[in-house]
Image (cartoon, rainbow, N blue to C red; front, side, top):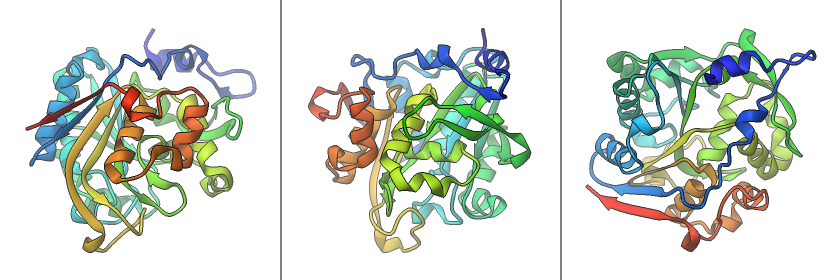
Length: 296
């Protein structure tokens, strides 16, 4: 059964969506690698990372509807490294369509005005160039979703992120003043509606609950330009460092661990990574993670 069809059958009498069959799919299989690729072109290193994971056809089937969820939260340029690099998104859209996807959607629930962030980040231009469908968050499409967590249980989520066959999470690695870092797990805040600020009171645990309760089929971390300070908004080019790296994995926690090391952070000092480890979502010791590194 397609994911989107399964979701439609998962509405209980209370109007709450829950996806127990999806949640039973383990996200912490130790044999799943984290691929790390360095190179001059964000487009090419993204393609290489997916190729080394087995190719996009391993994740996307013919006629799938695919959601690509970058970080497009801020009215910033590519050089300021607050939003996912559009060349990374371009590579993923093209590969998904080439794998036979019926439709590829690109969307985020932004903090700054969506039209501004989509345009200035370069994401809107990439969507137009590749034929992806660009969507804005519409509060009329919010539904209550049950994450079955300890700190985040039922919460409004945009239907667009649920009614798809495959969900590809594409964060940018950067500093975050409240969460320490933004990587894959934190990027899932962008699927939520409602008053997200409420979750800041126990942010690490909330992020881990969110990532544990929502199935991400593939996480691709943009670490080409990394915002080292004054995140998540940034603005100063002096806060940005070129790392020229992309990482990809089916294990959202373990790719976050590898990304944290690249940033220079001990993963156990990042609250949401530690909380995810306590939920047995993956390894926190990078020495126990199957990291495959390449240069192109």
